[in-house]
Image 1 (cartoon, one colour):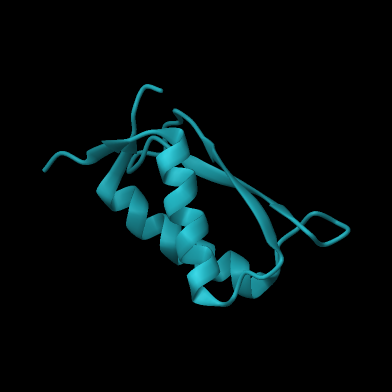
Image 2 (cartoon, rainbow, N blue to C red):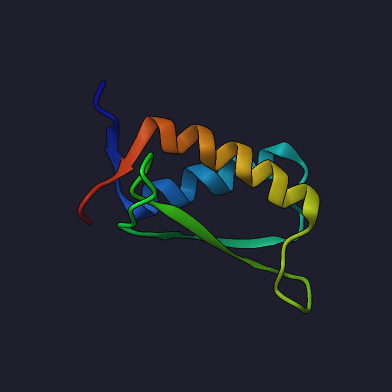
Length: 81
């Protein structure tokens, strides 16, 4: 089954929306979609920025993002922008 293609901006918006809605990512400042990459199961991944002085997101947010991104990577491929 082919995955639906999404642009970088669409994927960033979807991930950010779901992360904010989770209530676990208050420190998350932005999502950056990286790709195309070869992960075997997906052609994209994410980078993040945070409001924390070290620019690292909290562990609760990282866990939530892992679940969100894993699910979305199974549904969507990064299209040619």
